[in-house]
Image (cartoon, rainbow, N blue to C red):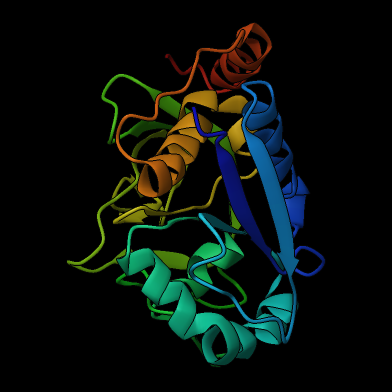
Length: 251
């Protein structure tokens, strides 16, 4: 049997790594290696091009507005066409918080300055102004792809994200604010690209979601016959349940 290998592109790891978002990469690598799947992680910073044929999964984390401004032009002009091509061809992407906003159409800051986004997701984000409260706290949301399964994490964002017709919500908020604190949606999905406001890091406390990303990426490369062997997730389940208890949620 051909040895499986997952090729991950970590976008802007030194600039977009708020609240330990790098832990998502650590989680993906560990869950692959425990199954004997080889993993290759390539860090792509400012000026580095993205090769759609060289990566199965792309990840970008969150950051403050200052760092988002630094990477926005590079994301569009240096990596943008190749990233959009990869997503359209079925590659997997996970974008968290600031990265999630930049994967949309635009982000309008509290000052009114507008950052053009990548346009992977049909969504836009607006900061309502310096006096508006931030959306902060623990989140429990029902995962749209798997009814009955919850996603947990921690959000801290000033922007309010609104989905267009071309983006589906990733999850439905049970506790917390989600995309904008109004419509009950959290995150977005388009093809195999996923965006979310959940930090914490997200994937270690949500192993089923982590495995879904791995499985989608491997199936695109090796075919639909790829299936992941179960792991002992008792520690991960305990972390997930502890997050649920913080907000009185349920599995």
